[in-house]
Length: 431
Figure 1: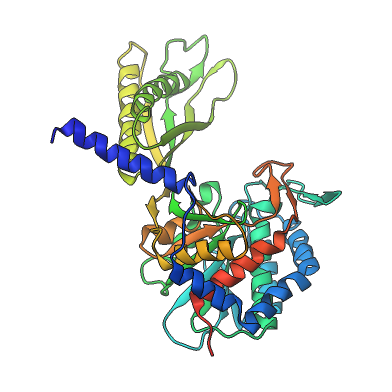
Figure 2 (figure 1 turned 30 degrees about the vertical axis):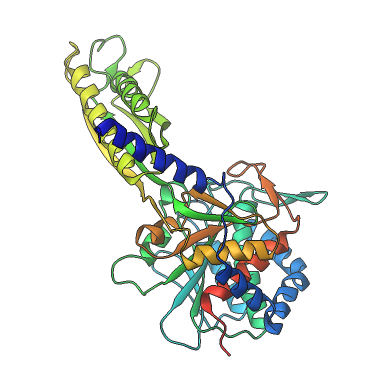
């Protein structure tokens, strides 16, 4: 077989697979799992727990508003974490603690030693200190930064624990109810990375709640790598030192070089992206800056392609600086590349029991299941071979990461019931 033909077949198979992941085909659960979920849902104790979710809906709404109005800026989630801890305690968790990096963990012991199941939502938002996070209601719509991403997920974790305890359900596996830190932006999934660092306690199954409609089953991790590129020079007066090496000029050359190389690479093959998101430096309009910097984000559905565009970025930066320094300017520019983000790619296979159960539970609640790919807390366990998915918060919402973020409780309880039934299916019911 010719190499070109082989590569074409590989790309075609990847594209077909990617189309399926992005939800262009409806995933199906095996009959075994459909029967398992129906049998579980028909149990008296489970029906009771599902009814409790409806009964406490006003409490869940109050929890959502309360938590939303506690600021949780990047790397400063402590106040919200303390409140979430007390809410897990009030909901009946057997033991609750905050770990070294700030994750809040509530333990519900199972009857059998061994398996550990996690239900997680993240504590942090993207909004800086000083942001007005007070909830405003217009009609049935709630407006506030972070109300959907991911405070609704936190309220769902609390409601799930309440329903399990009020219905007096005992599981075979241990369940950890977690409010994690550092999911957003430069947090770089630091909370979950800590939970999965070498030597940590074993986790066998991971379910995150984070954005999206009911029926979302995010079983694939969108990998990303991020850098801060820093260009440094002596700096000086724009007139008196004219001709001196200028970090801003070098940065401009670097952006052009990278954009040309990266655009050519990303024009074909499985989707890969790049973005210069932030630029800074300089002291005044009439000063040659002594420093210029930019932050760059690169993503891909393919781990190999992510490595390749990472390499293209590094080579482009070095080539641009070398060419600029050789252009006849006085003195030279130095380059420092600082990696500020590293999120892995990977996938929990569609035939994995966790994914199959998520599809079956979605069908059970008449929600159309859709497999998706994204960068969420589930990315870390996925990359380590631990079955993991992220499910949707339900309801209706929009303007995530914006000051006018909103959420409407449009059958929002159904997403909690889905999280409840899926968690119990993974953990197993103790007789």
